[in-house]
Image (cartoon, rainbow, N blue to C red; front, side, top):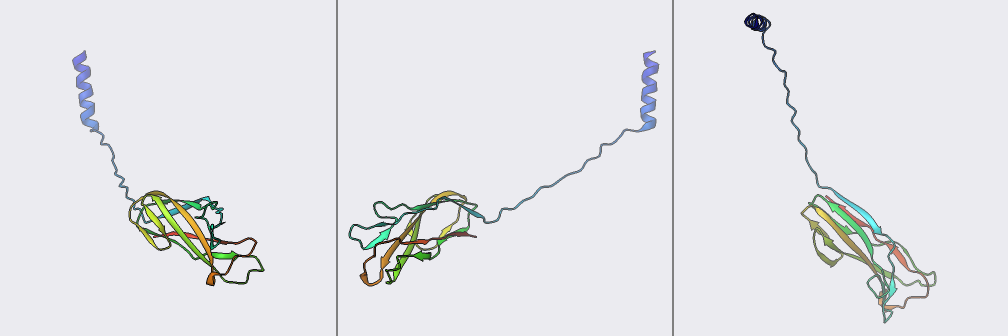
Length: 156
């Protein structure tokens, strides 16, 4: 009986043929472009007077730098724009010179600079942003509030 059953199964398989599996392939590709993102950690810097009152700076004792976090794929440049939106007391009509600068730690180490920095490698870092104000011709600062805005740029 088993022989007959086996023979019948074998014959039916030959008559029906063997089913072939359908297959397909999916190929994935991707590319990474030069990207940089910045997030402001401390956007409220503080200017403090120097001991001889020759400047106001976030670098002086009592001053506070701004901190901006950086995340990049590399092949980007980092810069700071000239200070904008300056304020000073209305009684102070003398020109105030604003000098922004920054340093970078993490993906690359950059000492205090106001120039362009090329970042070749991917990674993260912390940008310390400073601002210094001086008076043209050594004119004294007046009593009151001084300030300006510094924009940090990271671009491919």
